[in-house]
Amino acid sequence: MPRLLTSYRAMRPASRPDVATLPGGSRFDPWCLTDRVTLKRWQRDAKAKRAIAELWRFDPDPAATMALKAEIDAAVAAGDVVLHRNRDGSSCYFECPWSPLYEVRRPVRIAGRNLRVLQQFTLQASGDDVLTGGKFERGIIVGPFEATDEVEYCDPDGRHLNRNT
Image (cartoon, rainbow, N blue to C red; front, side, top):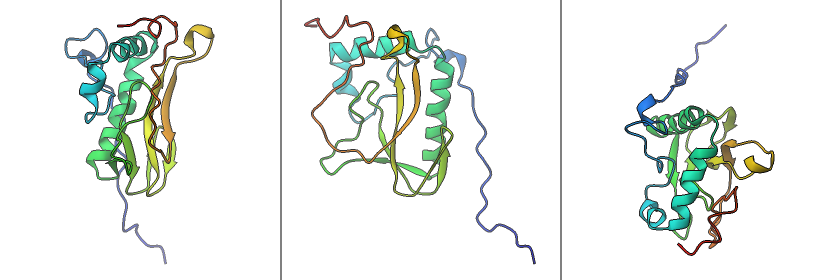
């Protein structure tokens, strides 16, 4: 005999961001993708400031990037995903925009990928290869992640890594 699903949860509707929160909008925060735990560190780093500005300059569809962030935020709000810290306390990916690390608590689908319990992931937004004919990359990177001292500023035009400020 057929049975009803006991653990059914309705799909979250895809949301489009408020235009005012997009680049050029009155409430746009260029650091909106950055891990809040480490945000002040990146805001004090001149190379990071240039990297964030370039990220948004090279993003051909900032609304899609913001929609991906909203999808992750909705999963966090639903309890499907939590913020993750590595054993050493690190909480963000090493590459611009230094997005938070997340861990899956309930099976969830994000950016078109099915994620399993305890999988780690982070948001990826990168225009690193745009000037050499590549595409802007937007999606998620699945871990596990390990601590590193490496920092990637994603410098597509090669201009900001050679400056002292």
